Amino acid sequence: MEEIIAQLQSGLKGIWKYRWCAVIVTWLVATVGWFKVYTQPDDYQTTARVFVDTQSILKPLLSGMTTLPNVEQQVAIMSRTLLSRPNVERVMRMVDLDIAAQTPREHERKVDELMQKIRIGGTSTYDIYTISYNNSNPRLVRDVVQSLLTIFVEGSFKGKKGESEKAVQFIDEQIRAYEDKLLAAENNVKEFKLKNTFLLPRQGIDYGSQVLMSSDALDNAKLELVEAEQARNAIDAQISGDEPILGTELSPAAIDNPEMDGRIAALNRSLDALLLQYTEAHPDIISTRRLIALLEERKVQEAKTRVAGPDPGKNYSPMLQQLKVALTEADARVASIRARVAEMQQRHDTLLAQSQAVPEVESQLAQLNRDYTINKDNYEKLIGRREAAKLSGDLSTTTEMMSFKIIDPPTVPLRPTGPNRPLLYSIVMAVAVMAGAAAALLLSQVRPTYLSPGELRDATGLRVLGAVAMTWTEPERKKRRRGQIGFGAGVACLFVSYGGVMAFAITHS
Image (cartoon, rainbow, N blue to C red; front, side, top):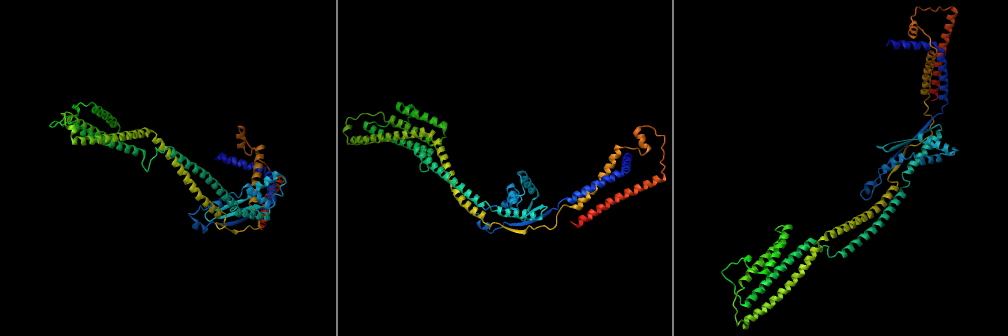
């Protein structure tokens, strides 16, 4: 701490030693600075405030019928893009600033200067926007703000009609494109249905249901054929005179009948294959078991009626003739049912063979129907959007959606707003004083002197034996006194001059 105080005292002594240099530098800096501040041109500023009323009665009336334009967003975007280069160049043409620009570089400089000095502010709560501009020409200030205000008001509506027409035109093009897509999708669906008419669902019945119905019909026909054959065999047994074997219970497995055994074995193999795929409750498994049971029963009946003695006079019996007629009818019925079973078996086999292609056909049909539905929905939506776009365009171009109220119009300013000369004069005074002190301190460091024995001892590292005191003569005292009076007068004149320029700046501000 003592070293800092010692250095401070040494610095003050050095400044005091070269005080005349400090006064001269202070006077020079202050005079030059005050002259620069005085010669600065006056800066005039004007401000215009405009209120944008975006609350219209059309909004609640047309809500839900069309897309209402976002008026607040339009005004906000216009206020932010007002200082774009095209708008600033338009302002220059409106106030004849472009005439003074002789070269393209000077024109660009004026555009940049204009963009820097224009200020646009706004409040999102009350929709009040302010436009301000400052320049040394008060009339130019008013004209620039008025031009910006005009562009701001006109720009909120300009071009909305053209944008609406472009939107409607674009929607019309999309509608024509979707008409072609819709027609192509309809033709694709029609051609696909004609090509795959036998594999498509009929009257709400899918392919799986058709296969199941065909299987049930085939099983019923087979059962009917077995019944007809049993009836025919019974008539044939009566004609041949066979009598049933009574009092015995025969097992189907113990009876030797190669034809029946082959059919039963084939049905058992089919049953085993079905059991690998389906459960016991499946209709195919139930019908197969029922057919096996009927064949086993028929095998037992034929075994019971196989042995009978011939009757020589039976061929001449009227009952025998009737039985033969019934046998003929039974044979015809068996043949008819057998033909029907064969046809149904062929149809069922065809359905089973086509079962691999049905999922692919149904998937393609679903894809075609989905494309058709999407194109149809988009087409209908575009039709509605076109009318909404026309109505929205009319709303965007009408002046009823927003209204502009100029709260403070731009006026020619009578008093300048800048520069703040009193503040600048004070800054120049402070800078001049610091510059003088800095110059004196620098000079004392360039031409150092030892003001005390301690400084000499610290600087040289030698022991100081003593010091010789200064003895002032009378002429030296007078000379010293005159120097002090001159220094004080110089400092006093500096502050008096500062007070004068401050008084002049305050009276003319």
